[in-house]
Image 1 (cartoon, rainbow, N blue to C red):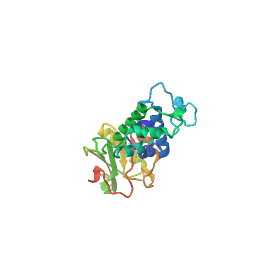
Image 2 (image 1 turned 90 degrees about the vertical axis):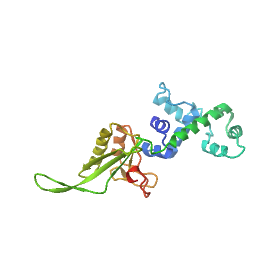
Image 3 (image 1 turned 90 degrees about the horizontal axis):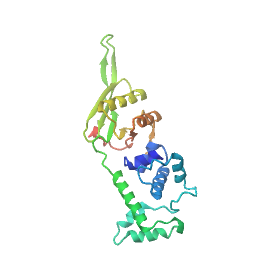
Image 4 (image 1 turned 120 degrees about the vertical axis):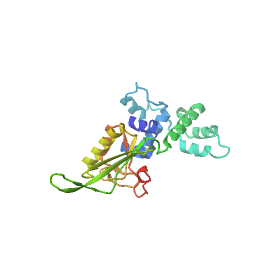
Amino acid sequence: MRDVLKYHFDKGYSQRRIATVSRISRKAVSRIIQTHYDLDLGWPIPSDLTDQVLDEKFNPHRSANKAASNPIDYIYIDEEMRKPGATLATLHNEWQEGNPDDHQYDYSTFCKKYRLWKKSQKLSMRSESRYGEAAYVDYSGVRVEVTDAQTGEVRKAEIFVGVLSGSQYAFVEATWTQRLIDFLSSHVNMFEFFEGVPQCVVPDNLKSAVTRTIRHDPVINESYLQMCRHYGTAPWPARPGKPRTSPMWR
């Protein structure tokens, strides 16, 4: 729950992106974020709220939960506000009609919640090309020959490439395979080379990163996911079947 809210507020991830990196449904992500706004807990969440207390607050079936029975549909409100003559006062009255008397917000609270939601959407729309925000990783597709100086044996090595968004600063490393152990090791070496960790890592649907490719919802390799979590970043696989749009391919 805390991770979902952290991705939403601190990193500005979309709900689809949060669902992917958290490995929960988009519906669950939406419910957590919506309930957070309804409870008006603020961000960061107060330190005195334990996980147990949060679970009770976010459980819609508990009587202690004071969230509205008909949550505010911020997307609908935002769309209506784009129409000529629309006002928050009118939309507030419309929303109140669908809620029992003991589950209503006054007009000022209603407006405050809408403004907070609006602000969060601006965070989610940040450009993906911000400096150092993402590292795009892939193998070059061209293997290089490496000759053993003692035996004369010739082997071919894979070329791992990682490029930081914005600056195009690149890390390049040769490995014998694209297997998971080499793939993870290259990430660790890349982070050390960059002397830092980006907010997200964007692999081009490599088998070591994605176990199954499903349109819009790739299944991320568990070991890769754990490695990213350990370093405080998040995997965000490139969309399958789309032209490569990362800085690496421009």
